[in-house]
Image (cartoon, rainbow, N blue to C red):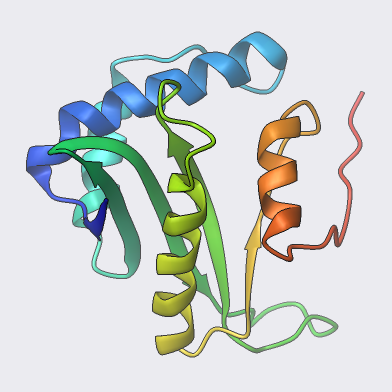
Length: 152
């Protein structure tokens, strides 16, 4: 398996992966997420081309089987929060036919190296409470719950 920077040539595969994760999220929380739509293509292309963002793909036998998107944030407005750079993983997706094979872990390890090189003090991400599989992966990699979001 190879982890590399995403390119425009990967866009079709990335759109399909995004559709997979988008459908799961919409089915589980339609009050929060919209169904997958054609608008995602332009959004994902912008993200791939963004200079300040990490957007990498996992490639297995020439096929894109996962992607990760992340960015570095620095708080400069809220006085009680740290001013240290924080890497926020915004999306992590592994193809539904390739899960539980270490691909998600490899993408996170790759991101961790990128984040450290950029001076990030920690990795952060959000995971929906219904996503047991993702929560298990993150916990196995040493992520700890820092907060919870409540809605009604």
